[in-house]
Length: 80
Image 1 (cartoon, rainbow, N blue to C red):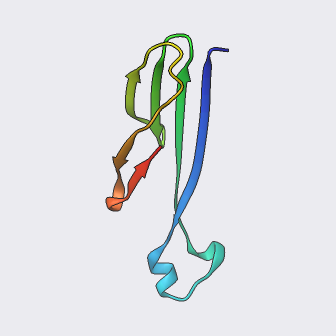
Image 2 (image 1 turned 120 degrees about the horizontal axis):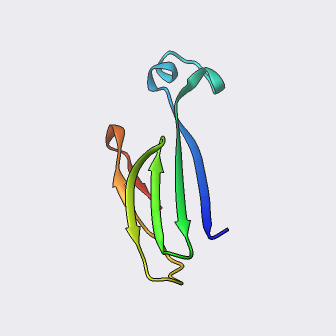
């Protein structure tokens, strides 16, 4: 297959649960998924966060580097 898919899954703790003294899974807040889909044949790169496309670009064939930064909910800075 010419497409590669890399998936990152992570979550943020619930600040209100921590303030109430809760711990571990009781503090589970929102969870997110970031997916990078990269076609080695066409150079097309797509970046999705929670199933929504947030970036699309095309690079020269054989380009093996990708870097992208964006800000998201709550002012968090994300970088791949």
